[in-house]
Amino acid sequence: ILGTMVAVDSALILSLLLVFPSSFMVDALTVHVCNTQHSMESQAQPTTFKTVTAAQNFLREYKTHHGGQLPTGGATVMICAGTYEEELTFTAADSGNDASRMVTYTSYNGEVVLSGGVAIPSSAW
Image (cartoon, rainbow, N blue to C red; front, side, top):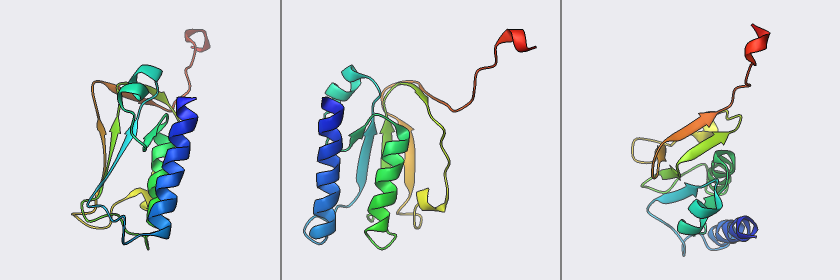
């Protein structure tokens, strides 16, 4: 249920930014990624996602609806400790606009493992 509520809140925030962009301008965006229930509860932010891909898509949508621009201070994706098994592809759509409007992906509270590979059993050798 929490994940659903977070997704709705994030969509609402993005909608408000689109409808009233000058009223809701921010200096920088901070997005949280937490893939465990405990971590999500401790990070109860409107922009908390369960996957790095969801955070990536949120930032892409933000840029799409703001003329390709991030806020002046850029965006930071804070990833909670854990293992994230996802296929990630970064393109120009995921980059910042200049030195002050960068996108930074960083660990929030411990070791983060991004795993997009496929495990090969030892019997395959």
